[in-house]
Length: 116
Image (spheres, rainbow, N blue to C red):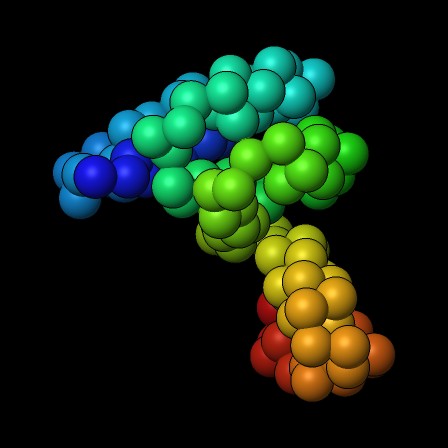
């Protein structure tokens, strides 16, 4: 059975442990690449969730993981001032796989996000 792993700041990912995820605590973005390289080498890993706050600071690490591993990697938004990195990543993956942009080229506007 494939493993599911949540990667990010401890206070943001600890809840995933309660639903069966393994957790990898990474508090600094410069350590994300190393953590993802170890997960890419583990063939039992099938799903990796990375907190948006780390992912937006280390986009190259996400791309390297995707090139090396067949596991699904996605960015999860957090309650800490989301900058919609996960939406941008999802749009990019859909566009690459289908050849068209289903979600639209325009980013979120202030009204689409709601009042902040």
